[in-house]
Length: 288
Image 1 (cartoon, rainbow, N blue to C red):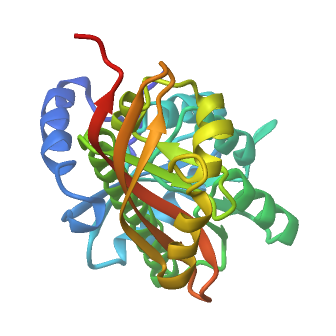
Image 2: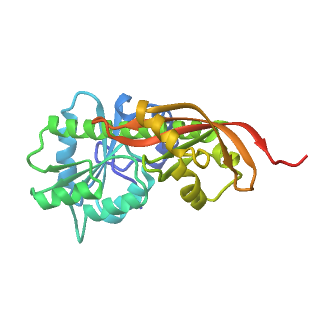
């Protein structure tokens, strides 16, 4: 694969690669929107498109957007797989292939950077297909003003940063959920199993998922005959605090636990799921 062409249309020399790697590592500590320079790659089989797009970007005062260019489908495919750029501008027509094919392949490689689709003529169907394939935006060549392109890139990067922050937040919360010493469960208001952390699995003697689904979740993790009383508390105030009960673990031992649960509701007040904490009080039936 040949090297992408730089801002001036010339191939970036190999001797710059080490410097570029250091710069990229430093810059990636910040999100694209916080950087002074955004790196963009245009994948288009016409050099005139590169010249036109570069001219548009040069009219944008801030941030500086450096544009590289690749002309073939195969080169674009390799570039998307490496995911080295902040944003990609992809032409819809690439000789015998299309930008949609590139987008679908990029999704398989779990591309993180946004892709903006460019086309020579507007089409509602292509617009919908591009969005369905994962494009962040769809712009028609010849109708693009500098501010349109800047806004499209900025919004696309903003969405990527928001999704990244959401994934990191979910990962942190999942880590807390998995590592807490107390058992945590989630189930639907009707008692269908949703989730359980490792501590709860340990308290119950390491049951299989099918047992959690068929035995424990339907009773809301309280002992036989106490389910209705527990549900009544939840329905009355939305929370059941310190409900002491005895569960039979999968290995046949009686485990006394304290079950505290809360009903989580949607904006319109409908019960969505129940989340509870099981605190083990004592375990009977264990050998010496």
